[in-house]
Length: 353
Image (tube, rainbow, N blue to C red):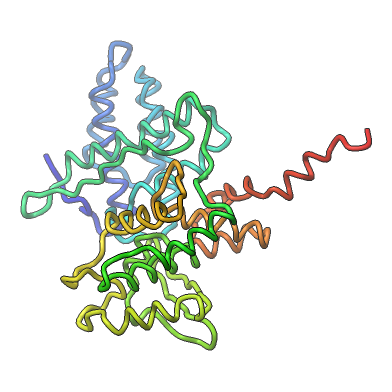
C-alpha cells in the first residue's frame, strides 16, 4: 500500500509514520533465522502497522526485535533516531523540505567523532530510508515525490579517506573571481541578473535555494545597507545584509529590465523561477573565466567561502551559525579547520624546548 507523503497533521508525525513503516519493512526483510520468538516478532510488526506515538516507542520496539534475534535492525534505528531528534526542533512544515544539504549537515554535526565504518552505516540508513519513501509515497493524481537521496559526495563517507573539508576559495582566488563576475560575457538580458545573483550569494552566504526564493518585498534599503529577509530551512526566518555599494549598480540595472509581473527578484525570460542547474551554469562560466578549478565547483562553494572568511576574520562561531542559518552549532564548527592563526599556535608548541 502507498501513502501520501505528508500523511499526518504535522511534520513530526509524518516523519514518525514513515519511520514506523520503514522499520517494519526492515524487520520483514532482515534474516530471521536467529529469531527465537516468532510470535513476538508478529506482535512487534502489528504494533508498527498501527503506528507508534513517539520516537521512544519506536526505539523500544526495535530494541525488542533485536533482543529476539534481529540484530541488524540497530544499523538503521540508531542513525534514524538521531535524525528524527535533529529534525524535530526545526519547525519544518513538510517532508519535502528535507534535501541532501540538510542530510549532509546532519551527518557533519552528528558523526564527527565516529569511526569511518559507523559513518558509512549512517549514510546507508539515510539513503535506504529515503529510497523507501520514494517507492511508497503517492499523491492523489497517482504521482510521487522523489527525494533521490544519494549522499555520494558527503566527505565523511569516502571509505579510504576521512571527512573532507568544504571546498572554498582563497583570498587570491577571490580577487580573480570578483573580476570575472564583472567581465564574463552573458546575454544582455541576463548579465545584470547573473552578476547580482552570484554577488548576493557570495556576500551573504545564502543557500542557492534561498537566493532563488527572494521576493522584491523581502528586500529593504536601510542607509548604506541592503537587508534581505530570508526564509531558510524549516521556514525559519533570518536576515542577511550587504553594503549597498557592492550590488547597487547590478541591482538597479536588473530592476530596469526584469518583468514586473513576477514577485520573485530573479526569474527566467519566461518569468519562471530560476533553477539550481541555471545557477550552476553561471558559476561554471565565471570560474572558467577566472581560471579557478575546485573539486566541487557549484555555487554552494560560495557559501563555504563566505563562512570561512567570516570565521577567519571574527573567530565567532555563533556569528557563523546565525549568518548561515545553521540549526546546530556543530555544523558551523567545520570552519574552524581553516583558521591558520590557530594552527600556527599549535605549530609553535615545541619552540624553546
